[in-house]
Length: 141
Image 1 (cartoon, rainbow, N blue to C red):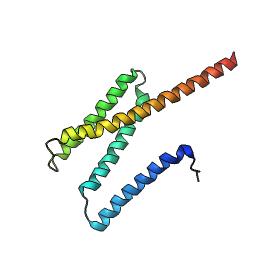
Image 2 (cartoon, rainbow, N blue to C red):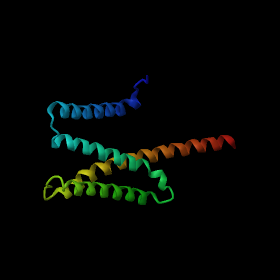
Image 3 (cartoon, rainbow, N blue to C red):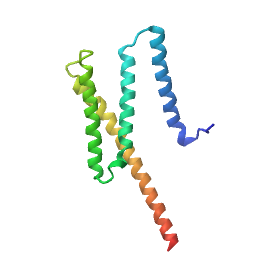
Image 4 (cartoon, one colour):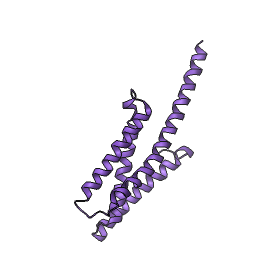
């Protein structure tokens, strides 16, 4: 069993929270025989979180392109998926007149914050690795 330390605390809380939330949705569906908008919204947020994390994690596949272009392509791809999902949903349920606008902002704001945090952490990690490489090169000389 792994020990939860400072570095793993927040990710562990997030995983436990996600498991409990999905479990709650499943239990409510089984016991109440009802799947409401609240449960659907939570599952859609989980789906978009999964997809956004997957898209961000694939940045290394586009290393040949400038980072700003990669970030733009990732965002455009994800917002296209969100809008397509919204459009498909409109066949099942009536959308609010501002539904596309609301989905755009409901996805864009958290995505941009998450992407900024991800790329800042990635930048710091790369900088740290570069410093270690420099130290190794200095020791060789």
